[in-house]
Image (tube, rainbow over all chains, first blue to last red; front, top):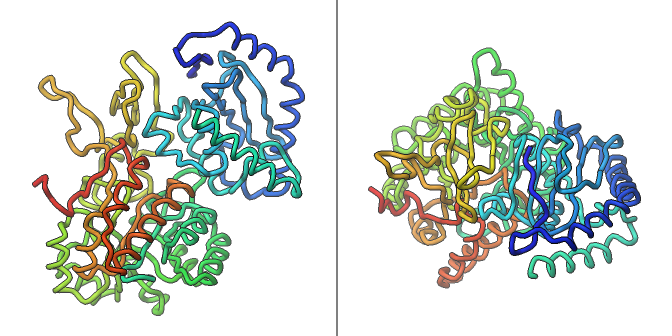
Length: 175
Length: 330
C-alpha cells in the first residue's frame, strides 16, 4: 500500500499541520456523516452511477490531498457506501490511493479537469489497484456530478454552492 | 458543419454531450463490452444510454457512430452481431467495423446501415479500400496512422469512398489491428479484448529514482520526480540498450495534426477524428472546441497557427507530434 504524509511545500513535516490533522480527526464524525449521507443521496437519485463500478463498488479508495491535513477513505458501495476521514499515515489496507493537490482532485471529481493530463504532468499519483482507480474515474466522468454533490446540497442551493466552490477551487489551484 | 466533419470521442453520455456542445459534428462511442477497442472498467454505453444519446444528438444536428471495431472471436461472435443490431436498433448513423465477418453481418442484416471501416482494419492502399467498398459497401475508411499527407492525397485520387483521418490523441506505433505487445505481457489485447494494457495488469510504485510503471510485472519506465509520464504500454516503454536509455518503439507523445489540417482538407479528407474515449469531458470539450475553431477559421480563409499551442498541456508525456503526416522520421 502506498503512503505519503502530508508535507509542506519545502518537503518538511510541520508540527502545526500535524496539529491541524489532529483537530480535524477530532471533528471527523460529523464530516463523515455529511459525506456518507451525500454519497447515499447520489445512490438513491442515480443508482445507474454505481452500476458502472462493477466489481469495484466495494473497493476502498483513499483520496489523499497532498496539501490538506487528512485523507478520505471512500467505499462507493451505493446506499451502503461510506466515507471515512483518516490520517495520511493510516495503516488500514485499501485497494488504491490517489494523491494530488486538493484543487486538482476536486477538478477530477466534477469533470472540470482531465485525469490523464494530470497523470502525465505528475500532478496526480496513483498506487494500488489501477483498475479500481480507472473504474472510479470513468464512473465519475459518466455521473456528471458537481461539487455540491460532495456535500449533498439540495436542489435549490446547488447553483450558488457550485459557483462558490468552483471559485474557491480555482483560487486554490492558483495559489 | 464546416468543410471537414469533426468526429470526437465519447466514453459516456455526459462526454458525448460535452463533445457536441463544444462543436463536434459527430461523436463515436462503444458499448460496454469487448466489441469495441476501449473496453475499460466503467467506460462506454449501455444500449439504453446509446438510444437516448442518439436521440439527444440528432435533436442537435449531430451524428452518433458506434465503434464495433475489435475482431470477433471464434465461438463468441454473437456478441459482435448483437452490437451491430443494437446500433441499427437505436438509429446510430453508422457503425465503425474492422472484422470481415462483422462487416458481412452488417451488410446482410442491415443493408441501410452506414458502414465505416475502422482504423483497426489498416486499409491504406487503393486496392484494399476498393475491396472493402465493393464487397461490403463500406462508405468511409478511417485511415491508418502511418500515411503522410502526400500519400493521403495520392490515395484520395484513386478511391471513391470518404476518408477520416486522426488529428489528435494517442498514437500506436504498430500496424493497426496487429499489435501483440499487450497480449504478450497480459494475455489481453486491444484487437480481441478491446483493451491495450488492461488496468488490472498495471501498477505504479514509488521507488528509488522515481515512479516505476509496470505492465504484467514487466517494468516499462522509471520517471524521475516531476518528469512527464506516458501511458503504461509496452510500445512506449523506455529500455536500456548498450548502456543507453531510449524509447525503442515510440516516445510517449500525443498526435496533434493541427498544422496539417489545411493540407488534409486540400487532399479531400472528409472528416478528422480525435482519439480518446477513455479521457473525459474536460478533454473532449477542449479538443473539440480547438478543432471546431480551427476548421471554422480555415473555412473563413484565416490562418490557424494560433490554435496549435492550445492543447499542449493535454498531451501524453507533455509533448505533441504531427506523427506520420510529415514523416520526418523516415
